[in-house]
Length: 354
Ligand code: GLA
Image (cartoon, rainbow, N blue to C red; front, side):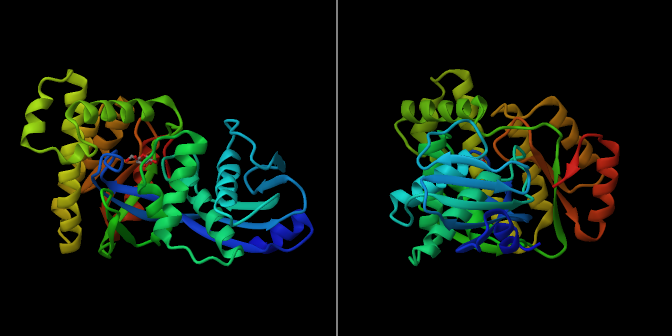
């Protein structure tokens, strides 16, 4: 059934607006986006599709293809630690922007897995905001939509994320990557060379972005920035680098990771533009090492997967996303990718291709 038919089947009337937004995988540049640094995410082939229509009540009625039940929540309901929070939060924002008032019937059809670090929440929020803007007949620049979507995460969900995910899902389609400077939101969309394939494989370890560990790293970076008097930890000058050596060891390590990750991301972006796969792959491997050792955001199980990926022929591999679980991303030769992925998954029970 089409999205519109599904909507009508559920709610008894056709939708007023629909939107589709992909998930994303970050190729390199992790935890740099709230530290004024560079990121390089790409869209994945999976997407969130939504259909909505204002209703006459004061209730948000949500049906997802993932769950049997239809969930009803009052307009403006505070968050409840439920997956529906992202929808309620997005509609709260749409209302604050004057794009929408009152209740909504919402249908969600998504094959972007949640808890996998591939931005299912950013895609859902972005899709709802885009549909609400369409409905209000306001034309909104995608960068502004990304800023509003981030505000839903920061202010409603309480997740102190940067803007990478919202920019990536709002600006990309599969086959391209976003070279984004998070200090000024300048960006460029780059075609991924045709003979490069980025395999995204779930480690089998679920992660929740809203869990404490992302926040803990965010706070360590904030603490370090405050101590050094900067709001861009990725861009320390020589004096700040020197002052860093007086700070506690954990903060020195976090800063060492984000500054080097920013530099690697810039270099990797140049390598992608030139089609220089060997350099890109080396930087992915270095990125993972520093993410594990200096940022301490990996796990022993994931380190093993990365080591095996590289040993068995991936040019480069790293843990992608906020850390502590979710997916790895491996750079492969396009012609060999399908076979490599099948073999890898067969060797590692519990892993699956995203
Ligand atoms: C999550 C956040 C992003 C970013 C990454 C880590 O995806 O939402 O803003 O910080 O983690 O790179």
